[in-house]
Length: 275
Image 1 (cartoon, rainbow, N blue to C red):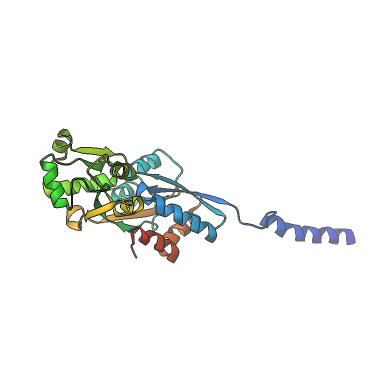
Image 2: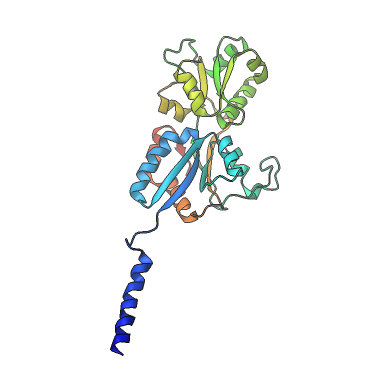
């Protein structure tokens, strides 16, 4: 009997220890965060800060144009949290819009409902290389110089949000993009970072990029597009329902939206965190 009691006590003591694991620490989690290229510098900083808050969570970022990220997600890429630079790419995954063929043409339902939010606002800016050799100061002036073939502009491709905002600016001024491209006054980038590089290297006379990218690259902003020209530049975010780490993805999104340190990083480069 004494032997049986001793064995029972030993098992009772061992089971709780085994449940905690040999170290007593929570399991490590890797989160794949797909984010618009314009968030590269800021999100990298925030990821470093978050490691102090949640040491068992490793954030693996994937930066590219929102259109490219959307394609990767649709093709089955492992993504836990998506942050796009425009609503269009998020709409294409939103099951609540499955009946709207313009917004969600494939009828996809890949978001955890209730997690989608408008996280950030950015601005679409006109930037110039060092010295501003063409003396460009405003969008009004740019529109005239483009029409007369006096300037070489870098812009995003049509599947890139910054390129889509640029197309709206062209429409605002009554400019024909195809005619401008045929005249040789436009060059394109596959994401906002490529457009930024064109300007930084002085390969073009000016470029249209986000305020945050201009800040990160140290470029001179000469004008900022108003809402009437291209609408608001909203960055939506949502957790994907294919995730195996929904709680951790939600926690990181909440950190981006509410933590004072994260907000300071975002707003320090020109983002506005939307309440």
